[in-house]
Amino acid sequence: MVAVIMLWLFFNVHLPPADQLQEQLEGYGWVSWLVFIGLYAVVALTPIPVTIMAVAGGLIFGVVLGSLFSVIGVLIGSWGAYWLARALGTDAVRTVLGKYSEKIEARLDGAGFEAVCTLRLVPGIPYWPVNYGSGAFGITQRDFLGASVIAVIPGQVSLVALGAFVADPTFFHGTVVVLSWIVVLVMTVWAYKRWKAARQ
Image 1 (cartoon, helix red, strand yellow):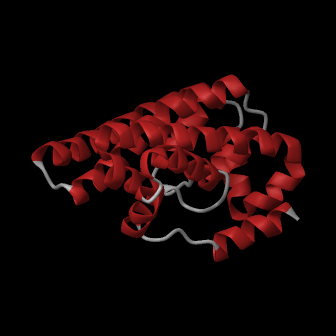
Image 2: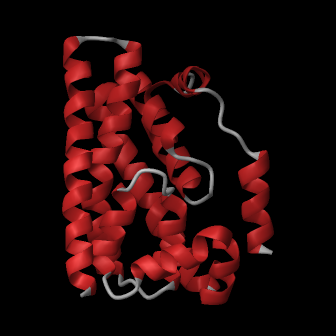
């Protein structure tokens, strides 16, 4: 049943473009930041890509507040997905993960903190399989949260900065985009080396 719901969400629920999302959220006035964090957390619980939310955060709130709200939202949603996976059990999560199941389970085996860090940073791997896989395949809450906080921040800042640059293409915003992506690349190499060492 859970797998069916996840598949339905992935194929049928689509977030509006970032500019439309910006317009809708701004309609909530001063509580728009709370609505944004709540919506981001819900999105992070599902297979819906979180990229649009981070970019919208930059469009609406700028680099600093957008990064703060995006990190809070994605961490709340990721933590919720982790515990939902614990409740569902390993077999149900394998079904939910589908094509990601074997890859995620193999990567997480034997190197919890390092594996979560690496998977969070590697391009092309969505957040949701890491969230559910970590909960189902024995990653401790401490390792999951610690690695998530470290690895999520640079990725979220890079996407938020991109949104801020689109809204206001200043030298500052462009510099933040470039520097944050450099940090993501450096941390990806660092996390991968630690992951390989932990598995030996």
